[in-house]
Image (cartoon, rainbow, N blue to C red; front, side):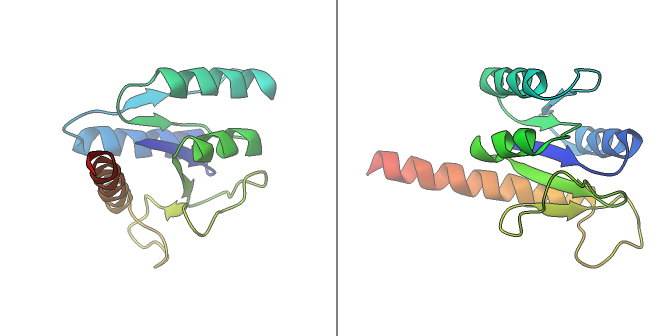
Length: 136
């Protein structure tokens, strides 16, 4: 399972990670690209991080279209945070979700617990169908 956090502020994205960690029995690996520079370097580092992961991973600071495309190609999902929307990464209506820390969030936003639960269900469903195809 792979989740990339997009938009809002560093503080909001880090609070989202803390909430996921607090509710998780099996803690996902958290990877931060803060301070890594821009462009190709970030994408290369991100690719190596994703390839070397074991289990779930959350990328806390997805900043470019290249990074978001890489996460999607690797089977991940993007959580677009309530607040300042990224002007570089478009929302994909078929796979991305809106997430908010606010109690009085817009109806189309999940809270962190809902978003994580949905992601776990999708991940398990995908793995179960892959297992059935291999067993056949």
